[in-house]
Image 1 (cartoon, chains in turn green, purple, red, brown):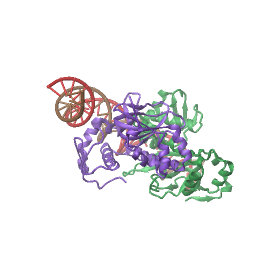
Image 2 (cartoon, protein in one colour):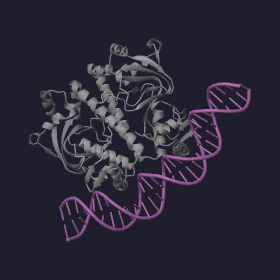
Image 3 (spheres, helix red, strand yellow):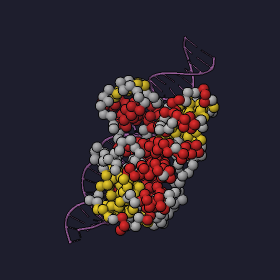
Image 4 (cartoon, helix red, strand yellow):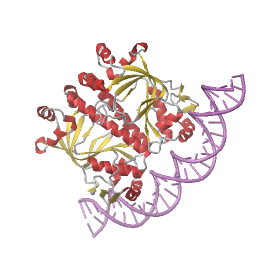
Length: 228
Length: 228
DNA sequence: CGGAAATTTGAGCAATTTCAACATGGGTGG
DNA sequence: CCACCCATGTTGAAATTGCTCAAATTTCCG
């Protein structure tokens, strides 16, 4: 399923730049990164499943991974979509029960750097900068999640979609005047907790807000109303 | 609005036992607690409003505080209800923008211990145990929030309510065979993002699940199915 | 004992989900 | 190179379900 790839064959330079390591010296970074292994995953590979013991901490070097739950009825709820530069599992590390609470599936061929969980705990204990970075990350994550929960309950599907597109555009540094949807429509629908049908029907309505989606091409003309 | 009360007049002993301080020596705790002031708030007092600068970190000694958002249309969405022993603002401390992202209102006369924000940052930097406790707390909080988001989108109001009652009972150490609702029904409805009407109509349906609510009295007969 | 707030109940409505059918599109094998 | 297949996306129509509005009750407090 996952193929091991020698670290040397991949440029891991940018991993040093993720927020988790900011504030550390180059030497410290090198030392820490030495504990990471790089794996290559194919689309549809499973990174881990709910209930599995938390063994590693992940940094996505390239590709996409979706985190999701499976409800009793079998419907998937996408919790989050992670892309290159994102980390996976920072939240769960210090939790009480050492088990994953979501499934994680690779949705686009990816290269992922993995670190033993204990390593991160040790790093947090040893390097205060790492602790601080983790706190900052968790804090930010919590805030984002809160905002999202609020949106989810108070906004219409059209508003949610508009917000998602704007945020995605900004977060990925895309050109607001024209970019290609980085995710499949079904995935986005799942991410926004709406049916694909509702998603589809929302697209035309976006025009009134100055957002135009044709096929996988998006343009945000009237980007005057960026949330926060 | 809020009256200052001398620390000496209140028993702050149990504050030492909150998870944030676990792992510290008694001396360290005493030292840290010296920076806290105790205030008394009345029902409906405002602790802070969205947009206010984050100045303090709070520990509820007694009472209840609700965190909520106000949507454009004026409807309130209760984000969380905090009770004695809970902390407020751990999440927001290390965020980028130093402003509250929710309103906080006292919903039951409360005594609240407040610490300057900088103090907590310093404490986290100085005492690794505090960092670890914070990480643990944020981690737990994040997990809970994720679970909740999943529930919110996949469960019926009846299921949500059942889950809420069971969790509340457990979290507050109440007797499953009979306890008094610790919150008003309107508040719970708001917390679960449903209208008071829907909440009300859900009550009778709980009987089929072995949960009986009469007035403010609750009993969870068939408590066989506790979600972890 | 009022009066206000909280809770319940009824009825109709609006909006999303479901179910079903159809269109698109890329990739594969012949 | 073309036909076919499967995954993805779109559209239509019916069904469900929580919400809004309104009014009746109950509860809470001063």
